Length: 194
Ligand code: GDP
Image 1 (cartoon, rainbow, N blue to C red):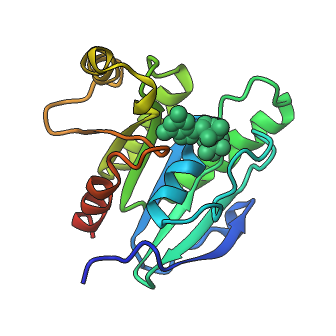
Image 2 (cartoon, rainbow, N blue to C red; image 1 turned 30 degrees about the horizontal axis):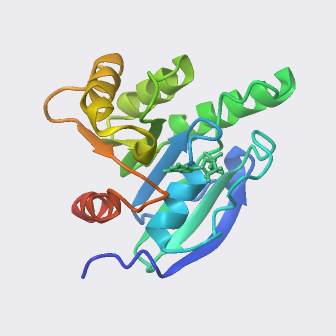
């Protein structure tokens, strides 16, 4: 039976290594810079309006949030990064938390959300590198596709592929959390991963 993403429950927020959850169920780790639309993508996937809080003051929540989906897998919402106004201390906290998360990583699939309109940032590249180092498969989601004109889509996707050095077999999924574009494909890819 495929995972029914609509059946999702918030389980836990982890702010330190001791609070991470590893119980053998598959884990889909979602990462993206602040404001890229990570919460919106998660809410779209789960068919909710506000399970993952949209528009919370960026960078304020350095926590790893776990949602159990259909009793079969965890959707792990990693804290957003790259928000300019965050204090140095908060950035360091984020770095330490991510380092310990990726050190122990039991990630089934990484989902890296980037902005379809822009070249991936240095922080996106760092996160991409961490996913690669764990050896887990990665799905790159190019969100906010609805903000591009049709003629802009192919060049924008090519720039993302080139910057992240994606190969033929690497998945880049055009997505719009706003319109729902790409949702079924993301569900299919995540189901195929377990
Ligand atoms: P997060 O900080 O990455 O969790 O980002 P949010 O989900 O809070 O979204 C940031 C802003 O981008 C909000 O105003 C969303 O409504 C908007 N947004 C998110 N996804 C899309 C999308 O696919 N298209 C458009 N046009 N706006 C989006």
